[in-house]
Length: 361
Image (tube, rainbow, N blue to C red; front, side, top):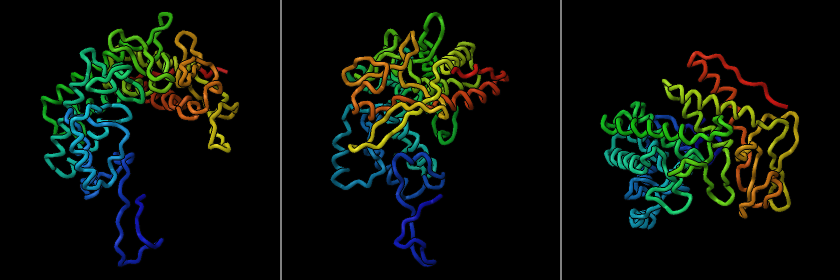
């Protein structure tokens, strides 16, 4: 439903009205006609200003904001910054947006910025197929192969659409599409190599893996070595979209689905309760609630684990400090749709019956 900006609740027949400006989190959700609008092009021009010389973009910026002349001048001076990243949707979101605007308004500036951004992604990929969180590389955990917050799968999804010449990427030339396809193949290979094996059985993935050894790796103080009940969902969904999966891919998906079935948490809900100082999140018993999964599971035991800024592993979320307990996504219901919907669709596509195990107590 369109939202209209006017002074009265119901505009008069002769009253001039116009749509509210788009918000950055929604720029990929607009109707196709909007991408040719003045507002869409204004935002695309902002995106060009924020693009670094490396070809990538920084994160956590509202690129739909109206920029002053002083801000535009300042951004031009920041082109050489080395803060380009794929974290929190950065870079691949901007590329998806520019492609849509270019499809509606064939401005060569948008096309060239898009090509430069794809080149950035291809340069950032490790020879083993993984992607670091930042490129040029930053020291620390940022160099790890990064699945956290769907960073790597977001990049791979874009490159796969480019390789397959899906709309709105039809303008990409064949040479670049071939390179994108090769990058996707290498990405799939490293996904298969990083799937964690416990007692001889494939499970799921850590949110990040060492870029040399492929072993699960820690990130921030409160992000320990673990099996991820959240990031692994995006990885499985990416693998499920492979048109002609190898037996290795099929085994990876089936093993991950079996792990999700085994680790579901029934009879609880993750609740936000108002307090005098704001709110508090807690795990509450509720027999009527749907299943939950923890963000992190201990490798080998499948026990949910939690850590605060002291990095001490705890098995009860209530035992970590309020700031981290309330400021992080410790539980998720994302695997439920994966199991109930995505898995059934995938099995049907391969003409395989669905044989999910029954939920535990």
